[in-house]
Amino acid sequence: MVNLTRWDPFGEMARFDPFRDMNDYFKGFMLRPVFQNMEAEPEIKLEISETDKAYTVKADVPGVKKEDIQVSIDGNQVSISAEVKQEKEEKQGNKLVRSERYYGRQFRSFTLAHDIDEAKADAECNNGVLNLTLPKKTGSETKKLAIK
Image (cartoon, rainbow, N blue to C red; front, side, top):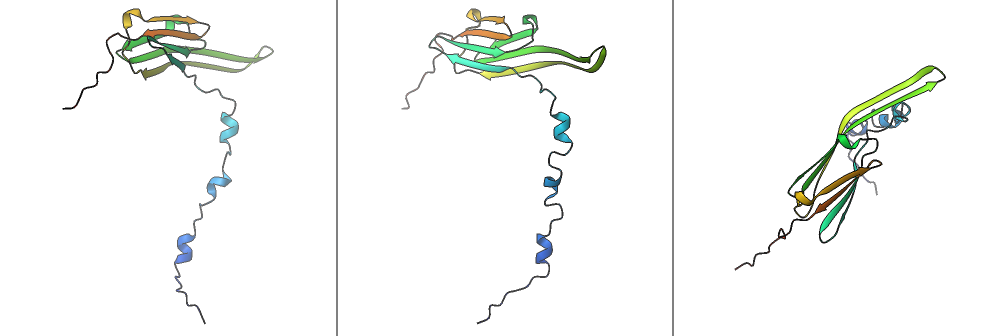
């Protein structure tokens, strides 16, 4: 018995894509070697722990002076901003080969489960680590309502 198939003359053209593998040809071409040795913009990394009475936050702000760090608290939202200034020079003998400067502002904001008592909050910065002690406000527990 013979199987009959319908032939579509444009079916082959619909499957033809001249740019299909173009991404593989140029994958990593010129981009990776150029940006490989450049450092990324620094970020504020956080470590947050909680007890019954307070939150403890450790924020990495390497190379930032404590005068250039600002912490603001609004209810249960905490914001940390830091003015970052980095300068790097690379020399070979007396010849300057490369000079890089970065001036900018880093910002990190997060929301906690409980409101913070701003009057009792404490902050200190040592060796590029910002330590925050954020006591929870008393009487701010969530109240569950009974449905009638």
